[in-house]
Image 1 (spheres, rainbow, N blue to C red):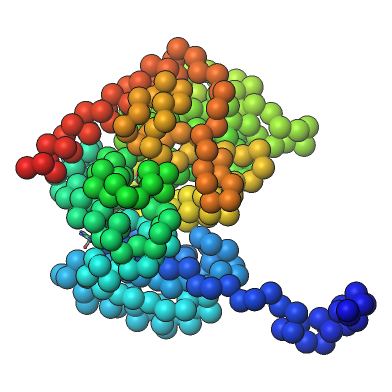
Image 2 (tube, helix red, strand yellow; image 1 turned 180 degrees about the vertical axis):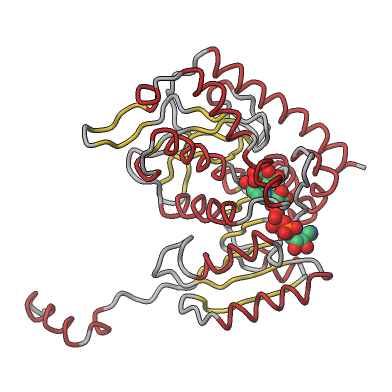
Length: 353
Ligand SMILES: NC(=O)c1ccc[n+]([C@@H]2O[C@H](COP(=O)([O-])OP(=O)(O)OC[C@H]3O[C@@H](n4cnc5c(N)ncnc54)[C@H](O)[C@@H]3O)[C@@H](O)[C@H]2O)c1
Ligand SMILES: O=C(O)C[C@H](O)C(=O)O
């Protein structure tokens, strides 16, 4: 046996001798990779923002045949960026090849809305993609592959994916409402003039749509006098119930109006946050919002993907239980559940015709 002091000296002379076994690359699929969010997210993943600075990745990128040249351009840029964590790139328009052996799948492929549209106006265009990719997922992905659906309508696309990939556990399919969650934190930070990193535990309930309910009533801010409720610091119930809710609900539309295209850097960043927290765990005492298959918690009907507050540990999410829900919150939460119920009926009509 080597003594501790000898081990320390060895480590200082030749650190590679005592290094842990190198981590195996994780295969991450990004669909719609030639699009706006795709272009923003692939360097984030390859720089370790999703899985950590010591986790090598293999990127699988899928887009439609008409985007093959653009996708190849993205592949060329990834090579040119000389990213040490990136251990290989597959750029393809073949679903089977794209899904083969992937451990994580970030499904962005689909059409974005334009000014004046609601996100569920995209059902007719995008739902068929998720029916088709469901079979590729269950046939070709690695067992226990974890999936994040970003393309809109995100909750209902996730539901179609689940329905048409019955061998994939429902807990492995989620949809992105972290962007709304981050927007809620950002609005609270701006209102109070505090750092966004000190704000936590907002909740976005429901659909990633304009019926979502951004709820600041459990959120807190870290101050020099300890953790303080946002409600107490804002001291303006009208702002919390009206302006705050409406700004977050309408933020996607406001970005489209300003940029003439939908949000991409914030969406890519939120998708990295979602996957990182799911895989590596949420910080102690902090929850985040994720669209997950409802288990009936808080009286939300099952059979829909609904955004809940969750904590994550060892690669599993669980819904935070026991938060007080007042009548105002209850009515907002029901409105969004009802919309998801309607979207489900519309989606089933499209996929069965
Ligand atoms: N959930 C969220 O928070 C959130 C946030 C922002 C955007 N979105 C949604 O994400 C989606 C992508 O947005 P974007 O701005 O990157 O759009 P984009 O048009 O720039 O890119 C979408 C890409 O998907 C590709 N695509 C279309 N069909 C495909 C298929 N069958 N397989 C693989 N790729 C396919 C397109 O060719 C295109 O390159 C949209 O539906 C948008 O509404 C969701
Ligand atoms: O609003 C959109 O259509 C894009 C995206 O869902 C967003 O929230 O920015």
